[in-house]
Length: 235
Image (tube, rainbow, N blue to C red; front, side):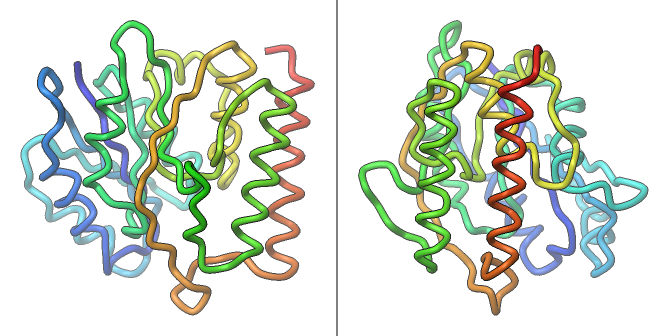
């Protein structure tokens, strides 16, 4: 079995090399090999130049000609993947590469379609902002009701999915839509999403992360639109 680790970046000069090195260093369960696909979304802070200098075995770099959004970057990684499964690993180090083997270990070849890393499994509350925690919980409950899932964290970053299944879905390339479009489509098409508890180190608004005020409301409304679009779609 082979895992394709997709690392997308836009202006992540501070952490991109560490993210790739950490993902490259993890040891997967016996019988698994891995590749890393780093996709730069036309960064302007030097990330692109750092990626062009990488010479690690099993690491490929793809450079977008212009900023196409995170979803488009993930789709590029899925197209480039040569593995049986792909896993999305964020470049900002909010998540730990050490959890990747745990997610892979949950895969039962021939049975498992998707494994998500959950930040809230077991009742954990490790968010910096209450509005983010409760917003994700609410959006997760709504998705479960609409599509018959049992997820605890739909908005998680680390998502491990069978490559052939993902390629068969009509996934959105718009901005961050794929984060929610992918799980909804998996459930709608009858696939099961398993979860494992993972570590999470959220950044603050001052550090460039976190939703507040109208931005949070606008994001929530966008997610609800994605749900409605997938639910009403004939595909």
